[in-house]
Image (tube, rainbow, N blue to C red; front, side):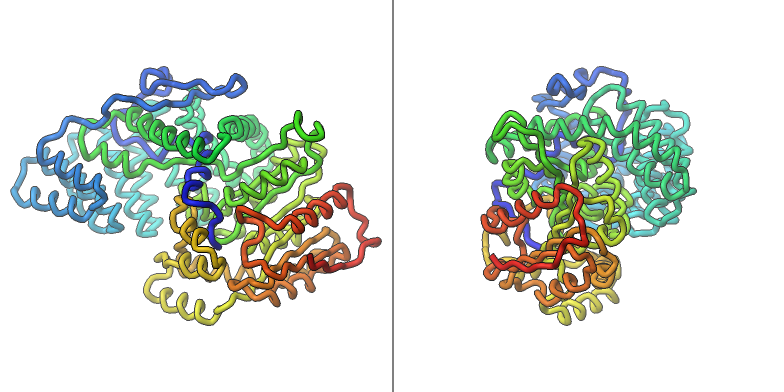
Amino acid sequence: MVTTRTLKQRALFAVASLLLAGSQSAYGQNVSSAEAPGEIVPAQVAPADIPFKIPTVMDTVLLPKLTVKQQEIYDVHKSGDCGAAKKLIQEELKKGPGKAERRELLSLAACLDLQLDDPKSALESLSSILETSANEPARVRATILKRMGDAYLKMRKHEDAIAKYKEALKMAETLEANDVLRIGILEPLVGCYSQDKLYKEAQPYAEQLVEVSRLRSASNNLIDVGPLFWSEIQLARIYKHTDNPDKYEKLVSRAMPLVDQLLTLRAKFEGKTIEEEEERYCKFQTAMLQSYIAQNNPATLSEYMWLSSQFRMRSLPLITWQPAVNTGNGTAPKAVILCVHALGLESRAFGPFAKKMIAKNFAVYAMDVRGFGAWQAEYGSETVSFDRAIEDIAAILRVIKKRQPGLPVFLLGESMGGAMVLRAASEFGDEMAGVISSVPSAERQGGVKMAVNVAFNFFKGPNKPIDIGTGIAAQATSKVELRDAWKNDPRARGDLSPIELIKFDLFMKETRKRCALIRTTPIMVVQGMADKLVRPEGTYEMYHNVNSPDKTMIIIGNAEHLILETPNQSKVLLDGLTAWLDNHQTAATPSSQTPSAQTP
């Protein structure tokens, strides 16, 4: 599905970066989180009700002093030509440099190899460095082992990655309890175990990760807060799968204030215009990167480049828009809508729709599906997982009900998201007041051609991503500006592996059957007749399969595939949705309802 924003809006979706925190791991010298963050990066204090210290852009140059040749390598790499930079390094290695210089060049080569998607070559360079590191400090050896684990992880060799991470963790035992390198090792270790569903094995490491993250977050430096949030998400899920309900509930209760603060912080910093938000985000991203690099204090070019290349802006996988109580009719929200996005998009795609709905006194939340949006930066969640995403919907419903008790909560989804909200209704429909499902059809236009393409690429590499975004965008919209926006949106995802696409197809078709399990939940289904991506007949079949007597279908004659995740929605449609939501704010009485169809 194509993103709905203009090119200028691309930074808008990362305004949630004001929730963002941290990055992968530290490779340079550790700076204790007990030190005042202002000693590293000037701190901008957040609004009074938010305790976090937010970094601001520094004028200080963080790049270590370089030789002439190192400067040349750095400049070429900075221009975006990793291949040319790698050739310069290889030329220097052929000259037979001394031991220290050779180690530095090999480290640079390994860093570039990972960026060039050549983890095998990176492993060779890192192994050579490790062989000459017997007398190096524990931090140096632990860092090398950690990077070797990263290379194995990139190759999807989880057993080898886990072995290296464990070696690195043992080597790091002599470091301080709150050392940021521990987080960098533990995050992918827990992620590997979790992705392989080895939850019992993951649990002790996940508990250790939460402990270290909590120690570091005591600084209230925003860059240290994010890892705590993500580590608690991982541990909560592990507790759920290891049958530890008491520990799960205790952890969720303890994490709720942090979630609330992060959601509130994001709302506080939303700008009045797109330009304002774009400028604010660019400055903030620079400040976060500088803070991360300064926190790790790189002494060499290779360390600086490792830090720069593996820095990850991390955001919450959940965002919210809340109506202003002191405007309009002056009342609190009358209901809540939780939105689930289409394939390839992310939570911010619902921004324009959300702003229209908060004007009608609805609170709106939007989540990222596993494998998309914020999840792409998290170990163990980078790939599509529908089972885990359905679990996320259930968990987020609980979060919303704790944040805004007493309000009815509706699910709304489009395309893939439309199918997901129907699946959620089939599994825990009693937890929601109703469902709006837009274009959920499992029948794709040109489905046979897509299947052949997936099968062909499966044999080339089942986990190797292929570009589907360009083709989907062309089918999803006839508007060139929207296609361009998809291409340029940094958080959109247009490449999925054959395995992920097969999972997607199976999920959509299974959901078509599961619709029969929806017996009481109020359902509204929306379909456009100008849809060139999915067949409307597939949507009609899903609607027919729903067994709830309270079901409604809206057919829009001139609508293309995306109907809700666009800059401008049909006024007739919004009025229809609003009326339907208003009518279902109280508990529905299914026996008194009859199916209906509407064509605005």
